Length: 69
Image 1 (cartoon, one colour):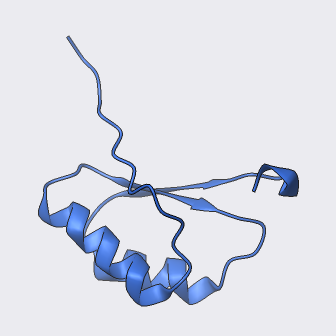
Image 2 (tube, helix red, strand yellow):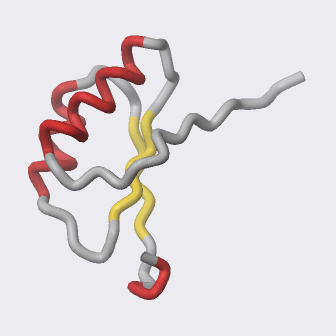
């Protein structure tokens, strides 16, 4: 049976160092990929620096409705 498990940190992450540390935590436990949800405004280094620091495939999910945040 094919499937996948979604792991959610349960927190909104705004700081670059926190984002990198969280991604590394999941890399260390063996996740297969990271999906980053972008809000209506994101400081670019938070995303770019995180993706450069981990060796995982990634996807970026963005929502175009500001009310959803």
